Amino acid sequence: MILSNQKHVVEQVYYYLIERPEYRELSQHEKLKAFLDVMKDKDSERIVMENHSTYIGSFGGIVRKINGMKAPEFTNKDDFLAWALGQVN
Image (cartoon, rainbow, N blue to C red):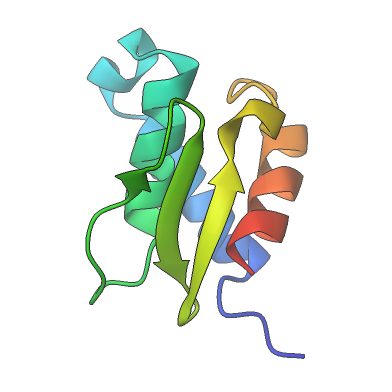
């Protein structure tokens, strides 16, 4: 199986976001939405919020519902990246 969002791409997005000074001030919810906005398919619409914790977006050509309540803290890099990789593939 070919993963559309490979580990090194997910890591690059993570590092890109944490280097932005304003990113440190965001809530976990805002960080997750910003992360998913970068990871979504480039030709798709922005990430849509179905409710306070469900994000809907197109990743790898498939529309997915992502439960943000199950996301590890963004600051826990290894756990967050493992979780994110599973969500966008």
